[in-house]
Image (cartoon, rainbow, N blue to C red):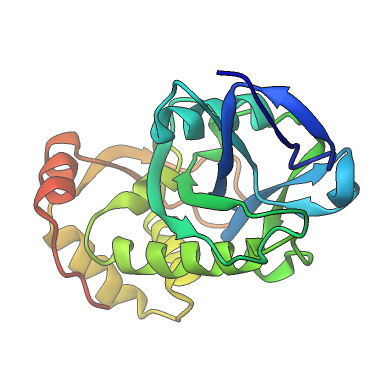
Length: 239
């Protein structure tokens, strides 16, 4: 059924077949050069024109929430087939200045080298920002981002989801830097190495880094079977 509602980008009434009060907003994490990053989009029109926010948009009337999240990420950034998990609903009455809008938050983990990010739909630009260098975000997107980070910190202690941020082959130092960035703490390298190798989650690929100015380190990848078991069963991994 066609409905008239307030467009979240332009602030104008439009006729469309979408749910009028529910949107999707997604925190997309990446990892590059030892830093945890988040993908932001700059709005091209409406009341938030020229401002940065999390990728998101309306849920269509005949699609599931998860399907909407995947579609919106694909439309806004070109990302598809990625790790995506629902967080919770954010529904403060004044979160959107022009009307009552409830948003369902998601977070995603992507291997940056596998994707060429592009702005699309109503975004004029899509860019990766280090978590510590994020600009002020629209609406309650800073709250959603902070909640996403806290959820990621809890999850990474219970399942090896951090591997979704690493290239196929990686060093132990890269793995440790990833956990340090997510958990925001400094780790003891020998202890970290010992704990991870004991889990039988890593496979030595008998290769070393190439084209590096320092001593080349050994490369590893994760064991698919162990990864699936630990992801489903879970664990309590304390550092």
